Image (cartoon, rainbow, N blue to C red; front, side, top):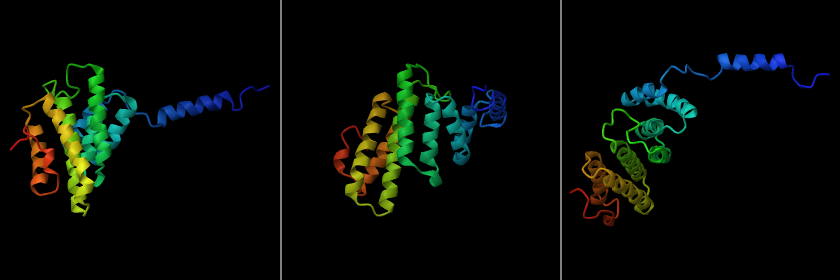
Length: 194
């Protein structure tokens, strides 16, 4: 009497075929290195599926989450600000939880640069979302929370690397929103770049 509902040979053949021809990729291939190059070349459409595959294989990689956030922030056709913000914050938390003393991105030589950039990019993506909303007629009352949250992220970045040009750049974007009357001036404090 056959105890298995399917013949064992058929199941074994199906597993072998799916392993050989399925969604697997060459383990020797460094997906993150390919992705980084694609992101730096601004080829976000090609990078997104590779980054997703990389994160399926290594879900706790802060660099993979960082670069996926960059794709969703920078690609006008795939602008997903809240997903980008989430990816940057995930990258920040994973890096912090790992206790690593080096940046997960080799080109960031200063160990504080990676966590600072996670916070800066979180703020920047929210400012981009504010600009998009303003261009599409959304009222000021609806964007104030986004500006406040963007400033919060940039304040966190300033705590990590107070002299970073990237921090000043986003503070200046917030200042510009305020000077144009698009945001509440109370968001600026004495530490804001003039």
